Image (cartoon, rainbow, N blue to C red):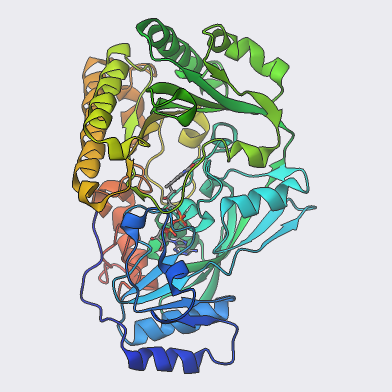
Length: 501
Ligand SMILES: Cc1cc2nc3c(=O)[nH]c(=O)nc-3n(C[C@H](O)[C@H](O)[C@H](O)COP(=O)(O)OP(=O)(O)OC[C@H]3O[C@@H](n4cnc5c(N)ncnc54)[C@H](O)[C@@H]3O)c2cc1C
């Protein structure tokens, strides 16, 4: 990943005194390393992503954010912004610089009449889900409730409802953002349209978003839950055939579509979940936007495989984002890759073998996961909001080693790299084998010009041009306009192009 240039200076005791003075008449907290709750500000979902900030400012308003950003800009101080703290690459942390911890800005106001959610920049998806559900509403949001609205949205955002509604950015109506010079701006389709375009996909590079306005939709209970299967050869053959049947895109009179028609979101992969007593299992989460009766014709072949655990039920939307329990504070690293359906059975087996070999050689990493994310991507491919460059008929896979001991950092990250390379080789193989047409892969990929990388997952060796693709030159121009000294340069930094601004 392209990371921050170490040219910015670090915080001194004098800076801390000045920041305390500047913020003395506000509600913001200024947390120096010796202060209470400093540790809370610097803690991250993956403890491997934690760094010791020189000072943490914990604001409650956009004006307070503005004071902190302006101070960092005017003094050339390294700046980091934290919302949910889930980035595993350390991009919401700073080694000795100024951290803006948005953890006291988690409010969500619901305008039920207009179906709009006014979400503060530090909110977690659990805050949004709970507030909207009280009004029978929901929007596309992260599938794990304690991830942050900030990072997930600004990089695109996939959720259980993406099959029907697209990405989180496809449902973002406006942003309130503090720019590098401290100005507070609103960006929407009607105001500062260029900034709105940039924020929808490359958002972390353009400022601190203090409010997101998200479109919500009436939402009833959904059919959801988890299935666990023993990974026998017979189960694998049948399972792979079922997912290919449900999710592979076909050309239909209404355009390209999967059999599930945007109603079903799923994740399937290998894990060693506690109920299985330490054995590798195939874990599958399913979220069907409809009733059990409607889901049954589609899902019956899965139930016919007699899963070892079947925890499917009708439940409220917020519960869909709690299906995968996640522990805060372990060491973890997330690496994505793209894949095209149909999944090849041999490839599925190869991934299982690689997963098992790795876990057998590293007990510490038994909580790791390799997964395929499944939904009908037609809607995501069809929409065109913002600077997000990963639209197409492909899907995301995920390798997530989870471990405890720092001595295993290198090998766990290498495992993530190795498996993601397997996915890359697989897609190349599919591309080579494919003829033109939707089921082939290469034809669809070419048509969309997608980068085949999801920046929120791919934070290893990838560089900004890889992530933003053909949108990169325009982003450079806008960077020169809105952040000419590159204060926001932690995640896929964009070099300002002053000549074109
Ligand atoms: C367990 C887990 C589950 C996940 N599930 C999903 C999923 O379902 N769908 C999906 O699309 N992705 C998912 N992700 C990936 C997720 O999108 C990224 O990890 C994302 O960075 C998380 O955002 P955050 O606010 O929690 O992270 P942080 O670490 O707080 O921030 C990440 C980046 O965003 C910036 N940022 C955060 N908030 C703001 C703001 N308000 N203004 C400006 N910049 C900001 C930070 O500076 C940093 O660069 C998941 C990740 C994990 C670890």
